[in-house]
Length: 209
Image (cartoon, rainbow, N blue to C red):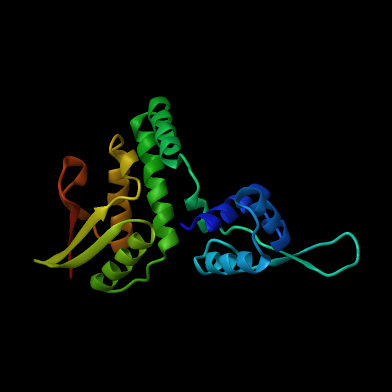
């Protein structure tokens, strides 16, 4: 990312919200003199990228012209360091240490069920459900595709959005199987497994007519 826009994101992260003039002042302390016109230009680019929200009016305690402030969108969080994977791994390990395997499975399956309910895939023929399933998976960080096979369909997933966690916690792979079953309405049969050094996870979905 261009350095000035990176600084603007950092300023908005620190302040929560800021006017054009406040951003100009903060930027000038970092990189030297900069104009409000230039800041507006960078903000428009960041808005186009979905990282900065449309300006809102800041309430004033005294009469005067309204002040418009800018803030970050949720999407901007991806541009700052985080330790989501470390936290997820630690939480899952603690759950596994303190609960019996059956309770761990209940929790994992409950997460999958919530995701299925969120997807809200309409009833219909299996090929239509496969299309909706792949769209849902790709929207949530997977890289998925499907194609017809003998007496069913093949679902291929070549990217797992929580791969660094699932490498040491195969329970998450079983969560995927539960998720796919809920999305497609059919029990998947695993044909290959990335965690075992296969190129992708491949599932066979039988077409029960």
